[in-house]
Image (spheres, rainbow over the protein chains, first blue to last red):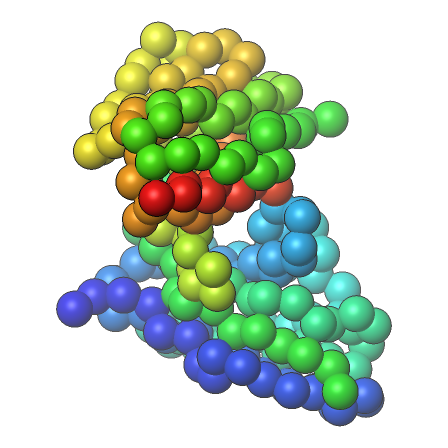
Length: 113
Length: 112
């Protein structure tokens, strides 16, 4: 079945540590997105990519980094510069530029310990 | 400033009790409005896209409508399995980098 796979489902990060969240899709979609979800707030865009080897900052990119070396993969690294990383992270994809995120992964819950 | 507001924040209904969720928006150049369903601890599931005022979409017990200022998600005779958070999102602008703005959601609970 086509879809988006995020891993791990739960992740714990120590202070000062970088962690990487995985996102893989087999939908042959060009565009991929990373969102952050906090309680009582709407999804906020971290980074998006419309094509391989290209990505753009979203509204809250500080403290995060991404890469898009393959069409299927869009990993997100939460760096030590992100001061409040505890949140639910969602990866999404869509067919191409200007289209809405139609498919979401099941999310990764990141907690700072 | 582009904005999407959903109300109420939470809604508790008895099974079979119909109601509506609201999504009001203030954006320049509406390109599309989207509804999603999100179960606890899961990613959102896409439900509907609406493009222009007067448009309606239906799926089982759900019907989404759109005006120039807001959208409603009507739920008719809901069942406990309809309990979820419903998210509204708006796409503003017509460039390839047009923004998508999400509301904070309405948490719907249906009691048997």
